[in-house]
Image (cartoon, rainbow, N blue to C red; front, top):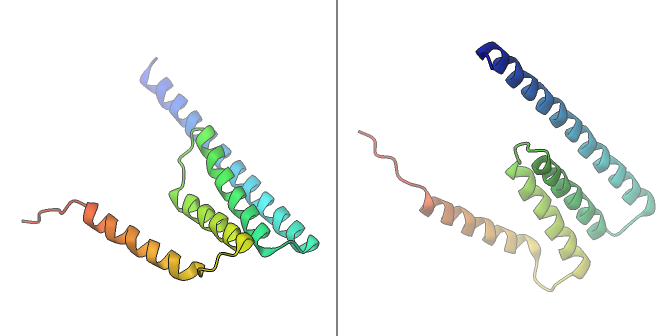
Length: 122
């Protein structure tokens, strides 16, 4: 393959992935609005509503993985938080969710600070 042909082929792949990325984003937002509308119309429990949003969010990242697109860690975290919040609301344990999530966030930050390599500046 000639260098120019390879460049054109790479551009086509990039355009194709960009187009797929935009379509997936549109599908994800569409599902989100449809779900929120249904949840409000049927007056479902807030836990069920949160769980649905979390599943849609995580499902979109699974779709990105399936189509070999870059997975967005931010949205995975957000999806997991929605799922946890939904399950917490449905099962209503005696412990409050927010303080526990703050503690977990602190532990994660502490762990990530210890794991980072220190760069030596001269």
